[in-house]
Length: 274
Image 1 (cartoon, one colour):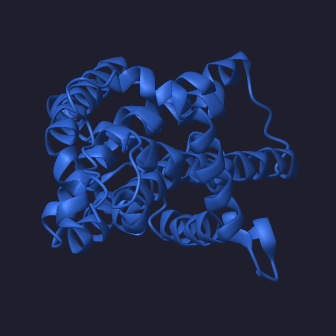
Image 2 (image 1 turned 180 degrees about the vertical axis):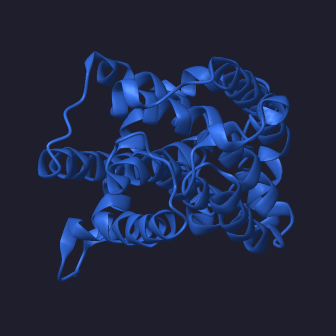
């Protein structure tokens, strides 16, 4: 009896229309995003309120730190000033952590069927985006509590949200592909997030950085994003360093382009390495 022909799974073959496949597999994207969202809150007593626990505790800690150091807020309630910076940082750090482990967390799926592997880091962003929207609603409640009303600048908030997503997906794609090849990056990613929490302008305004160092400081891609969030939410009480946002966007686009290039270059080996 003749053996059936072997089937070889080759992700990213040259004869495939890879970017067209991303659209063809859109239903898989929706399914995986819904699965991740369901798993996040399945059998939890508090439910979606968990999306507020980490940013709320961080806000309390950093607000106490600001109060003890007599940080200048320009008349803005300290919790609002802090939470406006925590929002984009939490979106970035959560998306980075989830996307970095997305390939390893779906190793069984990768080794069995073909689909564009870029779908996996992308679906991890959806859960983080839902958490972000919940936290954003809490920011509205917080501003109403302190009777601090936004200005027209709030309309620019989607721009800075997209910038935060751009930064997270750019770094996340790099971390996802590197984690498959070098398992050490499972330890590196939490360190990057912890280190970034202290060097990003969350517990302090970036205006305290000397002017001659502001541009260099903006090479942290989240500096321009966080400053943008504060500018949009706090209105006239917040200044904005526009060169910092430009540096952030250019750097994120560069990381995204090189990250996709490296991801596509190594994608065909994922099933073997995992």
